[in-house]
Amino acid sequence: MTSVGRDQEAAAPAAPPARTPAAPIARRAGLAGLGVLAVAALYFAYWRQSLAVGLSSDGSGNILQAWDMLHGNLLLTGWWVSDVSFYTTELPQYVLVEALTGLGPWVVHAAAAMTYTLLVLLGALLAKGSARGGRGWARALLTAGLMVSPQLSATSVVLLSPDHTGTAVPLLVIWLLIDRARPRWYVPVLVCLMFTLTMVGDSIILLTGVAPLVLIGTGRAVTGLIRNGLRHVPAWYELSLAVAAAVGGLAGSYGPRVMAAWGGYQQSPVSADTDLSQLQHGSWVTLQGFLELFGANVLNPAFYGTTTPAEVAFVWLHLAGALVATIGVVVGVVRIFRPGDLIVPVFAVAILANVGAYMISTHAQDLLGAREMAAVLPLGAVLAGRVLGDRLAAWTRAARYWLTPVLAVLAAGYLATLGFSAAQPARPGPNEPLAAWLTAHGLTGGLATYWQANSTNVDSHGRIVLSAVVQDVRDRLVPYLWETNEANYDPARRYANFVVADGPSALPGMKLSAELTFGKPAQIYQADGYTILVWNKNLLTELNGPGLN
Image 1 (cartoon, rainbow, N blue to C red):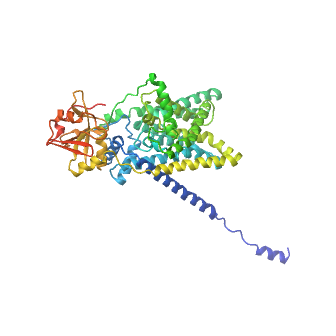
Image 2: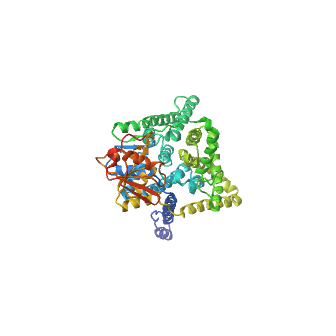
Image 3: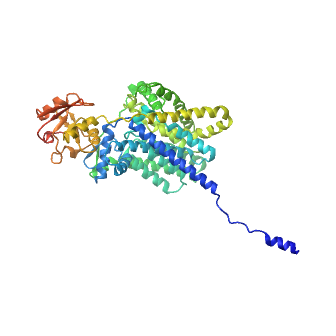
């Protein structure tokens, strides 16, 4: 080698150490920041929309139960809850909100916005599945888009008091576990545990989660074992998931009995009767309810007061989303007997089961009963994203010159709907004037009809205790044991010296029934449409007999 060659070799620079490019890190940080801002914006919009509907005594009862749990009564001893306890679903959420903010009607609105935001995010994640790139984004955005702007008229169903909507949160979490976790022995164990806990809080999970997974999982497993032999591992895994769901549903069904045996809450029974004689009417109401959940009830837009031109336009715009969800259900039904993605046939069967059960039930009287199939919205959105997201991405690439503008218009319309709903003025609770008047006059313990009692208690931030009563066959007042604490009727623990006889949602004949039960009042006040009868004694000493719904 020449001296020139050696000099050139010595001058060669050493290779620099490997470094992580700064640009990708900054890009990820920027995307994460935008994601946080988007979630915060969604939460704010849903919170504002929830405020547009005043809080009733149903949600107020749940607030009071959570407040009691926060102060040590973890089993809700002495409480009569409704036919759905929400003990393992919304009540822990309410406890958390109350620990941070205190007792007041805002608890329901804050929790409802949190629940719906979680549904949008969980639905998008579940729809995305293992898809990456454009396919994954198309799935997630389609699902989130179908749910992003709940119609203002459906606020009381999806953005207010616990009404089965929140039960979809643990359901989607269960399916995220099944969809994302590798097949391991502990997955069915966790699935069983989560179904059990959710079942304790809300038995609607039987229709939306347990039964569909048992049916599809068992059917696919048996078919797989017949076709591929007894050593077919995927079939055994799907069978284990079906068994886990069945065991979880059965164990959770004993929740109310176990709680009562432990000295906890008692659950008020309500029959879920079927009425095939009203099938035609039930089918019509079910169709309207399905459209209402997707913000597209063009058949009866005025039921909830949708009358302005903007609201009517938004309803027709959302018809596209309802159509996409319907196509997703149809595709899911077609794939029931095909091997592959387990979630698609299970969600299709869950939607059909929920809709079918509602259609033949006595709940299908008007749109107020649509809460019984609230899970159809997130399930349908996830199903649409899962089966149509890939096609949407492909169609957009193939026909971007006309399809992209259409999608942009729809997206803009959905976001405009979200903004319109969020811009509505907040509506106070129906009994805030009563709470203010009673507080100003030093009346802190009394009796009232159910729809006045819990609502007033929460509107007063716990300073007033109104206990719910109802008339018996003799027109006397008796306790109404629904979303109420028996301790409120104990004269050794509470003092009640007045009855609210008139006002919003008062029972007819309350004044006469109060006088028949307690005699002539010492004073009678008229305030803001309410009639308040006051005695100089503790009325609870003369209040006898249970109030049964």
